[in-house]
Image (tube, rainbow, N blue to C red; front, top):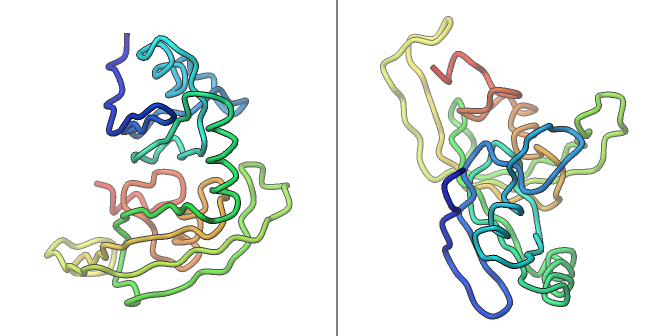
Length: 181
């Protein structure tokens, strides 16, 4: 049996949990996983729960569930109206500009799918240079970023930073594996 999800907040309408990386929010045709955050929390609380947003499988962070259908509809509408935002911390390869905006279409998992508009804002919080050679470079440079997706495409942040050649550390799909060692 998997470890219970850590509950960060709970009231009469909502519960927020700390989703670990590697866990899907709910059942999906792209995966044969048998354990999902939705199922785990339902079993943990002994009642039905309703996810109000998603986090990619590889992403850890705060995941919000509603405890009833009406509260779920209310919060989903707030996300859709951009009254609620998501903000992420990420470490990117290289020294990223102090702040920026990426406006680049993103396709879903299927490469034949039509790319959809996607926008992401970011701000660099810190930069570091380490004395470890990677490829032809004598040192390794990294940037700590706060990232805000303005649209909600699957793997949007990872794809956007790949697009500007600042792959995210730890991203085994779109990243640069030499920086993950």
